[in-house]
Image (tube, rainbow, N blue to C red; front, top):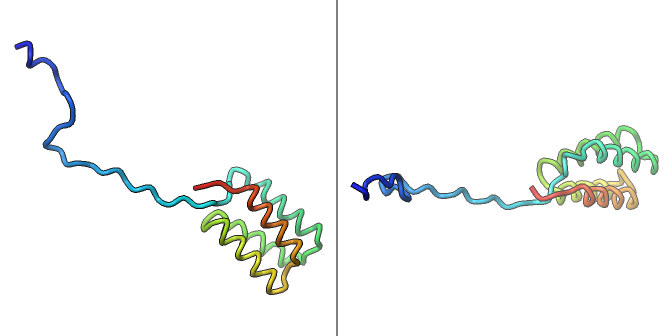
Length: 107
């Protein structure tokens, strides 16, 4: 009887094997923990370069949405696209891209 009182020892063979889920590919996204400081920085950049208020609000919302939901690369592409369209200057787009790089993390 000494050998029967050991209890459960290892994996049960009757249960199906469970596979661990594959890890999705990580991309750089906006650090949402610093959302207020990101908004503040974007507003400061827009005010410093005297960007039209309507364009500024639209760009800030789009940059935050793309950076937090898609990726930092998509947000940067949007900023460069707006620069080519003539909505903002090269200096503004450079500062916005630098701000995005400072406030990004892998998710």
